[in-house]
Image (tube, rainbow, N blue to C red; front, side, top):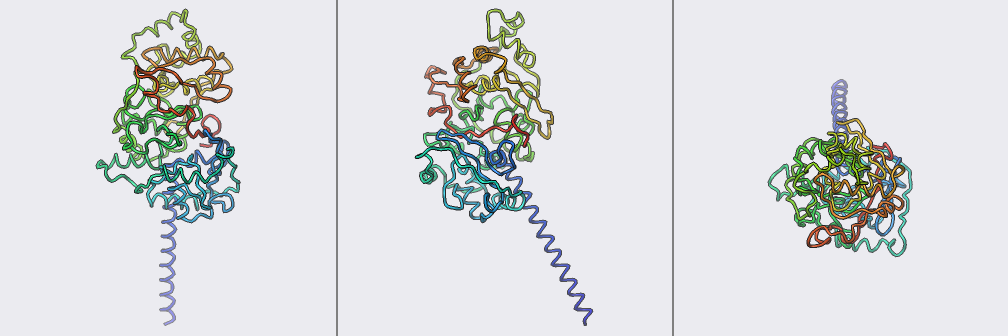
Length: 466
């Protein structure tokens, strides 16, 4: 009898042990899933300071009302989110309301995170509570002057601009691949935070394609890098890109006719290179479903060879072409075609011909880095020329590139524009530029000013945290 009892007890103990191990496996799987959702959401890029510890906050985010610093979202119980319940975590993500009831500054994309599914939030909560190292680092107070520093008006902003949406994928989209892509772009990926222009209240003018042509039509300079249009425009959008191009760009940061740099380099390095192939292809597929929108004529029908001929003769009488020949042609070539997956082409490049020249001026002055990724482990750097060329020379070469080959970008950059960006960080002003017969405002997506956005610091080229 005693032996039978011991045998039953042993069987029971084995069952309990198996159940505990199974539960542990389930928890580990949930944490791993949460880590992936955090990668989809790119939490680490904004919640890690330059040279800082992961998720411990402190990254500088400029805005028209002052400077905000990202917060500590490690599970530290005093300085982080260690005391948040799942419900409080969910409300913070979807509504932008902290544990203490205060509203979070909308530099956090909670209008998009309102779309996060219950399962994705539950997994992310498990990851942040059990898969992230707690860091006892206090948050840095925002540098915003009174009365803009008062938080109670943010509750009004939240009521006006945070949508009441059904979490998860849009079931009205019949194509399952496009449905998944739409969820990734408009939910965790929060692409519109940078690529959709903002309205008078700093809100995104559209959160989905139902918002019209303004959706993903290009945003303001962010850390002096332009977020271009993701619509199917042939000149300044993705009209000349295939789904495979978009997939490879998000996976590796480089394709034959483009290379990532600036703020988007952080997105690729910290986030999209870690996405599954299925999710990358779903994103590419969805973006290619978006139709083109109204744009100027920033690209001429074809290159007649005049630019290459001018450069071949030594660029006589053209100071901008001379600067290009002496400093740029060795990598980007006389015909502007560059070197595949190393030095991007300048002829027809949307970054070069877009209405606002800030990105081009920034990379000429300060240089840029094509970051290493898992599928393309070599880094490529372009030097900055601010210590080698004068402001006038940089303005000359920028204006040359924007009109060379078949480029037909509007406006003209001045030495004053270069000096201002170089010394104060102010983006290039396009005020008064006429981009069409209907005037500048016909196509300008940021009528409230070039800096009318939230502008986090860029990690790529500054630290190696990714």
